[in-house]
Image (cartoon, rainbow, N blue to C red; front, side, top):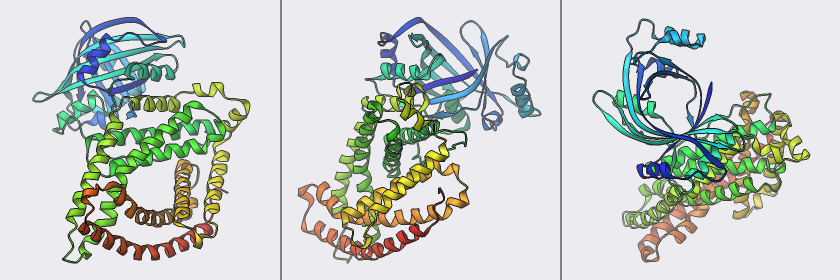
Length: 517
């Protein structure tokens, strides 16, 4: 059977509250129980099964032993989709004879043949199970898990919520998660109990801090229509947002806020591309507003990072001996801390749960199609190749319009052109799997180079304004002002050359083959 499961990391207090919570409106509890589970995971010392994306586990549920084999899957935005086989066995040791799927059985046997394998780690969990139903015919198992993962020498606590869709529509899974977790702090799990156990067995930290995640390649198929492609794009945007939310909360690195803002901007770009298919859609409008607000907050921290890393730091070796950059850095540090606190407060605000879960529902459910009019349905039913061609042409025309009389553009008009180029880049990336790499190579190369130049011009243009806005008045003294003037003057000289370069690169992009036509 195919398992659809949403995993959420929570604290112990949240687990206790959920265990006592009444059923949310629209849901009823059909049964509830408490189990103590001992799960034993098997593999070779070098993790042969894990490398093949297979999990082999035996579990005692207080009464019987069960053998579970999971294949494929992985975690994206807390959502797990994988093949799961679970059957009763006589004891703690795995029994391959009971495996009904011959393909999986043969794969297991071939992977383990001639190798030493056995117990790698185990988990001991107290699980509170509640089954929820709704009028849509959904049955959802909610497991509140509290316990430990352990090897022979180490252990680590586990507190998480698992919502598994047993039957019914996937949107019910997200609606229940949103109702249960509405006012409670959560993080989507990027791992699972087995992942924690494997890291313990390898001597690694059981919970690795999330790294900044760049956008991933979106695999669109020729048989996709505009609607199915939309959901794949949303799913990838959600994954980038969720991963970088965790990164910002766990690490103090500049790439986290940067990639979080990129993910949010890509999401808003996707909404814009598809806006003709969703005129007046309140859900998408609300998601877009939330994404814009969070992107602005992430941008406040990101802009300060850019100021330090790309504007001030390159000039430090050129400063006269009589100039010290330390007072300026001291002032910027205070502004950075303020922006960082503001961003982290937004990221742990339970209100963000609704945004992420609603976006997840939109990405993985088809329910939103039910209220579409005939015109909108036809737009979403277009072959993806046709839809992509129209979207790319529209984006490029917007760039051309912004670039009219290029040499005479004001600073604000250059900024508008830069934003149009960024949207063009996102659109190219959304649909790039539909085209031969060689066909889009020249245009994409021109677009990247053009964006880099405009990005630098924007950084220079905003540097003076950013310092003036963010620095406390008490620290805007003569020494700080002098250093700011030196830095701004050095970059302005380079910016004049960069603007000439931007015009040349624009001409190259105009001449590049428009691969989508």
